[in-house]
Image 1 (tube, rainbow, N blue to C red):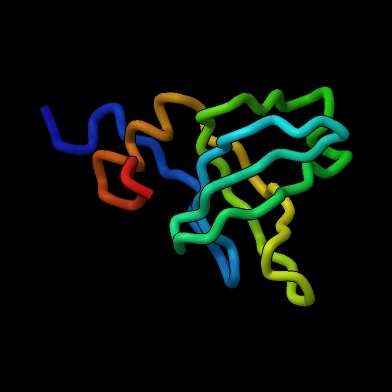
Image 2: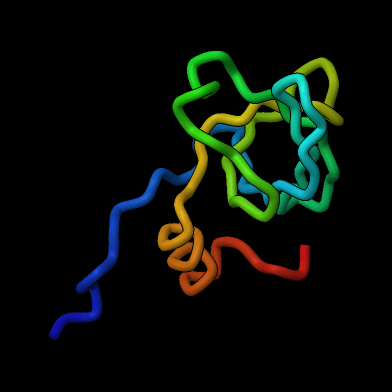
Length: 97
């Protein structure tokens, strides 16, 4: 058996994107996230993800902070549980943040 068995190529952050964990559901397509850079942000779920990808508390997501307001961001990607576990195993995200 190889070390890569069961591993997937995951979408990684590009540019300003950062990993985050959803802490609260705020309603109106907004969530509160705790980013891996140590910042708590309000993130917006874009229309292309609504009704297609369901986001819940404790989900690992990829967010892109706004250029003009650093305390806000857009959700770019949601990782499934197995993908989030893989990211934790590889050390990309930590539970302490």
